Image 1 (cartoon, rainbow, N blue to C red):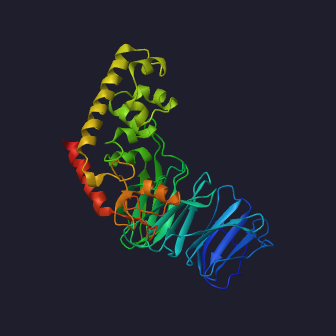
Image 2: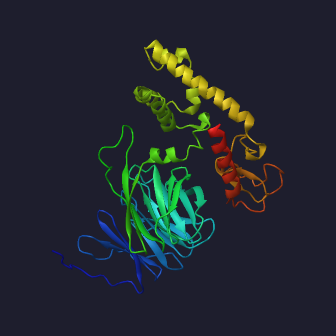
Image 3: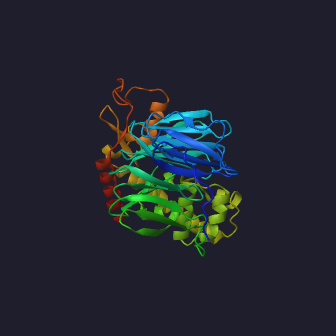
Length: 384
């Protein structure tokens, strides 16, 4: 049975979005305002409407705790509001200045994603209110976004129909055309799919499109990484703890996964393991098992040396002197590893690492041609 219990008619133009917290209802509209209502009786809170945006407000969402409300607008800003008093906590400007169409908090409230009409997607630190990472999709406006329940990845949907999966470091893990006429919404199920493999959690994702279809996807963080072995699997020193776990399973050493995770063994630590550390630190008692692990690690060391000596110079970041995973072009015309160049700029170094001249702009553009060349080289190297 469905019963209408209340109608709110305070906005002066089309209402674009609504969101619930445990005690409030938030709405936003083309009239440039956000309104807040008590759930107990649907009266408007004393400090509503919230006014700052100079153009239409497209989306609003609460942090999981309900203490913060985010709103985003055609004016190119995402604003964080204190829901206790309606005060502005932060105004975060999209780097490109493009209209912001969607925003979402991570499950732990530490991050906020904003997606814009020009395809740029920004991962903000929701505690310091500073830009953490920035990337973009190839075509269309970003109109949908959802975090996985663990918060280790999020998905964006575009008006061109592309569904893109990102990890928490803004690496694009997967992208494909999901809906021919554009995506309108997407969301994760709150519970993992039963019966997942050991150490893996699979979650269902639903995407909705203007093609009159709803598609259900099954997504796993580790599973997606397995689809892109180029990085970091080729370069062991860059492996995360999860990559090490995947390697152990692939080598028939799955019984050691828990031990390695307990000791925080990532790729760099893995390459430094010795027979003494395996016995004394990791407490692996079996001599045969220790010998097998050491043989496999030695194979990795040999591969690392071979790959490092064969890397073409144009694939190496001038700052880190390592193979680039996410190359970007700076205003000086040179390509750099994205994270390294962002760190360079964040330390107020407005000069070029190559020429030492002042950069005319701090905007970094993805070098997709170089990325494709690196991926192709990695794939060919992997097949040798």
